[in-house]
Image (cartoon, rainbow, N blue to C red):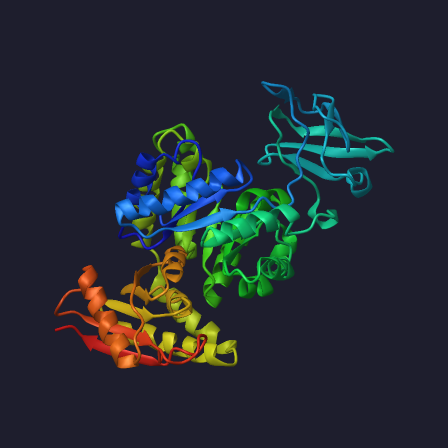
Length: 478
């Protein structure tokens, strides 16, 4: 696909058959998401295997992101068909019980009554239904319905996060994370992150396994700790659904822009998520507002756009991906990436880190300028860990951005990063061999042709992992 903004598609009942998976990948899906909040571990492991087989059949490189459930608070189940709450109704919230009704809703959070105070707002599901706590007694919290609607199943219950005693990662997160890492998943998304320490705790619990972590920004505590989170995380997700419950709705677009900008500045891939084309769960086309939302996320500089229910339970998941590709591609033609790159160069000089990474940042900045001056058709990043390609992607270059790596997991993981097309390449003993074979591999792929000029970034392949990228060559292909 020509679109440089990546697409994450959530899999579900309507999108896990081999035929639909093939269509999804061919439509332009770069990363598939497995929502571990629903279904069994065995089902998700089978789906992961199905994705790998679909990638083989279609010749597409695709990463897999497993989204951990996190400390989800849910209500007791409502009767079949659900119940209707009307604005102004009185409802009791209790900490114990097996069945929810219109008048009494048990919540599976033992310290519910100790942690609620009068005036708190309690939200169900995606935020459409909310209650206000009027008073908290010994056995129940008296609430009034602010916004009514139908509740069914076991909806999530959103309580004020600053007083919640739940922690991330949960014991279930660790069990699921270990199993998915052992099965070769590329990313684990961490729910309810409140600080960078939550990510460090999960890394320790998963050791010695190595898997990339995506921090879901869905609490205001996480927003406050973004400086540390964007450095600790391997990627970030702007989870606008829960974030929009934690803060006034009118703040969400501004937080989205701020988080995306901060992630791009440090080279941490960022996903914009939630309700991007919600109407296409049942409709063959999106609303005009959804089209504008996607385009604006592209203008923000997001690395990836995420589909949730649209691709998991929608009537035509491949059509949703094709539509998102069209919208993102059109927006990219209007995006001011050169202005972005110029600003990034100024920002970078104000906060140079120490050590090898500083050299990599400096040479990728130089490469962004040289690529424009030399009118190269492609920038080739030779990378062991993916860091060189991530650092280069921050500048959103006009030239094609191609990464080559000997590690297949790095090749897959780079599918989440803006503009990066990744290819696998054998190991080589010298920089000269590495550069020559990298250019040859890219020519063989058809991404560049004879008569064009490419820029190659590399480091000495015999040095330890983590060493700086310190070679820049401009190579005419003849």
